[in-house]
Image 1 (cartoon, helix red, strand yellow):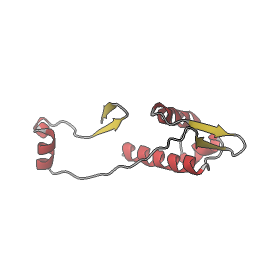
Image 2 (image 1 turned 45 degrees about the vertical axis):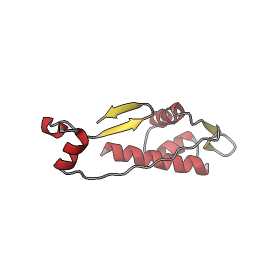
Image 3 (image 1 turned 135 degrees about the vertical axis):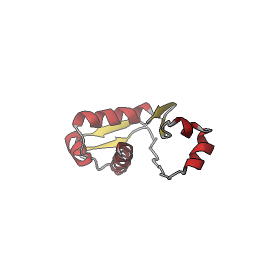
Length: 110
């Protein structure tokens, strides 16, 4: 369930950055239960989407700095074999996995 974990983490990051209540990088990473390096990787991913993230030493918080923000939403739906067959044109018969994630302009198959 790593995908759900990552989405929840991204939602939490987004909320804290919007509110400008992240704390210093070490605190922010600890709050998210990730390493400092992972935090910077997430921030780089956010920046690659065109959302600039700055850091204020005075506020001790990250903030969205170019007027852009993230809106994160996802849903989970259990599909029957018939639904999968309809959606994927019969790929179920080939026993392929049907989950994928869309990130910016590229698809990531899981």
